[in-house]
Image (spheres, rainbow, N blue to C red):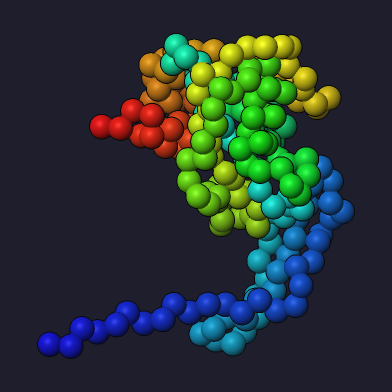
Length: 196
């Protein structure tokens, strides 16, 4: 019996360049891209969030006592504080995801990582349905120790929290922690650090 192949996926064809609807501010704007529908040949527009930053790095930091170093950060888009893990964008083209994770951990919390390991070889996409960016590297940092006061950016409103791993997991389960990148980093880190 001959095995039938699945049909090729139909791919809309991008037409022209992405057009910015607003000037770029804080590395973000809204853009519109035109496409051709492969089934009908008709053109359509897709509006998306755009960034001039290619990627960011998030870190799941643990102390030697298995305490999670988290942040409670005010997020303007949600107009509230969000429990999440430290992270941010590169300051230069040569900075690696692990270097960004270590720097952001230190700047945002005052904790220094003993060791940092990337959890996946590539970035994860946080919201490919509505943004062209959102490419995030995930890392785990172990043996983190507090060494100095945080050096936060002027528009970062952050409280550092140190909670037991057990409590952090319970905060995820009960819906206190709702940030998807932080939840994903948590479970990938746990599967690496504590294999079943």
